[in-house]
Amino acid sequence: MTIANDIKRLWDLLCSIETLYQETLMNDLRLSEKLKDCEEKSPNKPPFAINYLEYYNSPEPVTSWIIRHIFAYTYNGHHLFFESFAKTFLQKAGFNMDWIDTPVIDKDHEYKGIDILIRDKHYAIIIENKLKGAPFQPNQLARYIATIRKEGYSDDRIFVVVLPKDDIDNDDLYDSVWQLPKDWQCTNSSRKCRVDSYTCWCDNEDFKRKAHCEKCESLKESFRKRTLFIHKELSEWLYNCIENNTVCMPEEELHKQYVLKSAVLQFVDFLNFLYKTRENNKYKMDINKFLIEQLKLNSLDITEQLSLVEDKQKDVNELAEQLDSLYWTKIKEYITYIGNKYKVHLVYDDNDGRYFHYEIKYNGKKIKIVLGNEDGNYCEINSHTKLPESIKNDFEIAEELNAENNTNCAIWRYGDSYGNSYKESLLRFDRVLGRLLDIINDAK
Image (cartoon, rainbow, N blue to C red; front, side, top):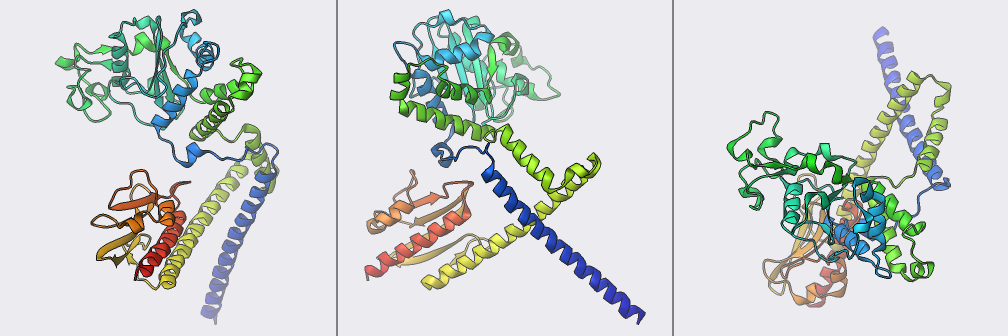
């Protein structure tokens, strides 16, 4: 009887632990629902986000193109945004506003590898765009300065502005970014000092000067005072330019330039997305206050508060794992549903059962429809030869698979938003497969 009682007590303990575990998950779900309600009702909730730059994951050249266009806008012969930018940021680096005469800004093109160049009779401003987090190349800023030197500008009239994705400064860069080797005009791969794609010998901790280092000029200190790293201040400045009209544009002109105003505000929001500064401080305080009340933290001392928050983080992570498992279970159910709906056999291309294809013959050609993954989830129709026009030019399929770089043999499209959603690509596969089968059946 003793052994039987011990087994029963152990079983009851396991059951109570399982019950407690399930209750914890349910409490976390209820807390997340209350949190969502708090977020929706907060008077400081950020504006509803509809941002085409974010939706299309706009690359760095697009953001440079936008900045050049903003700076290129003129009113009565004045570049209002550039002049405001110079007054707000460049003056503290020694820029003289009286130097501004007729700024040259090519709004459609970079200049000799420089993302954004603004030049005039008495100055040149190099703007290096790293808003998407691209790494610096070896000797990059030094090479740009040397390029502008060759055009007759003295060092004291050359200014360097870096627009980083993260809040970094000059000392966070590799030393080689500011080094100007004798062979600076050679390609990155052929320069003697290069170690790999992003570093030179001088970036190594145990660096010892080599023969070719003797003629390498260091520009970091001589340009330090005329170098600016502008982070979230860029979006704040642009927002004030439009919303508070700090560019001093006449109200009638500001009203007339509604497209410019819309573009700037879209760009400001995209910058805040890149900087992760969309949620304002008051909104964050609302959320913190809600969580403190729900977890009853004020009744505990600080060490107990930390322990409780830490435990809750673990619970939430466990809940996220459970929901992820449930998500992929439902995904696989939907994949089975697709096969049954169209009475087709889907061939899996991976061990997890997430990526697959279906192959069918049409007019003697093998046509394959694929749900794949290569730098993101995508849906594709392809063939070893040219795709039939009846498929490629079908209106419904063209609407679904319309990537810019489609070819004669393949048409595809990645999941567009929020991390290349797998579900989005799966639903697209379902629609495209249904339409493809309709085309093939109608041709019989």
